Length: 109
Ligand SMILES: [Zn+2]
Figure 1 (cartoon, rainbow, N blue to C red):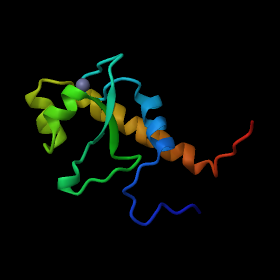
Figure 2 (cartoon, rainbow, N blue to C red):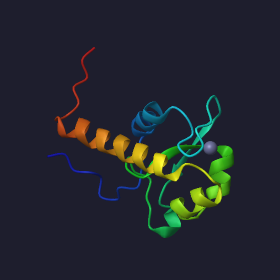
Figure 3 (tube, helix red, strand yellow):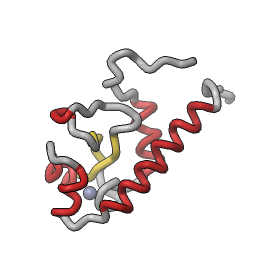
Figure 4 (cartoon, rainbow, N blue to C red):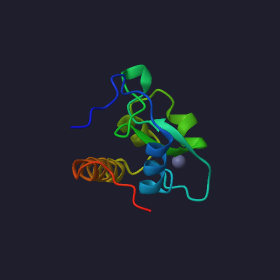
């Protein structure tokens, strides 16, 4: 069984591209065609880490606005679709876990 790196806090580029691929737009407001930044859903200051299960792409505006806020209360304040985000986020994270459970990735060219 594959073990996650002990620190669990370093997102690899490959993982970041997987996340970007899964969302393709800002996870919070759905902004399309903008630069997307890594955002920890659970902020680092609240015990979050840069992991496949905690990082989502955010546009500059959302990233700056959310900062260290707790995600659900922040989304409500901004009148963003929090239930839709949580549902999508869960689906994507479960999708990652399911893909990883299928065994080690084979890199066939
Ligand atoms: Zn956004």
